[in-house]
Figure (cartoon, rainbow, N blue to C red):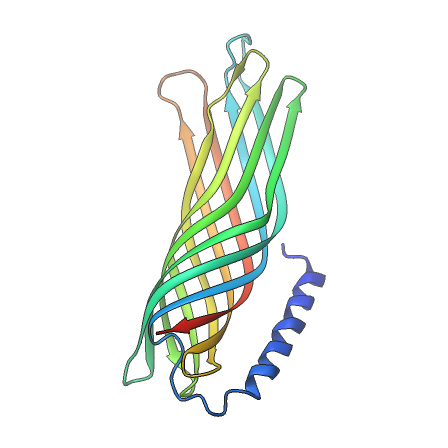
Length: 229
């Protein structure tokens, strides 16, 4: 779960930004994210990874299995590119490609025995999402998102006498809600709450004992700006 204290800090920061831009948007006429847009954002991410990784090292007569239930956090910066359209009935639709980079990459070693450990590394993610929303006013839009993400997760079991296969680039579902408000006719302020879920498993048909079952869930709070051309 997200640390409640950090969530409160994020809420305070978001409230301050909202107050500041509310005082500056009186002259904005263009709806946010109209046409082609590019943006940057920053935020906080919490990632939970559970499941197991199992290998059959050459010098052992039995499989070596490592279970894990991990919760890690990271500061995240991102860049996104998309195209949005506001329809006459106040419906908003868009498609967005986003890339997120962790400023402090998640790296954890989980040991089951002195002879068996699993290294977990997670440093970035690429998302492709569709946005569907509603225009609250001429300068405000509330939206939801749904799409797919590719997480740069590398899960590597390692053993005395052999190295297990690395499980990486896990695909999952991206979902969330967001709010956008025009700051000027070309610049908008955005706040997003995004989730990412992976459920993946692997059982090697080569009968060498390599298999895993991974469940991962990210929750991210982000604020940023977008420029529409």
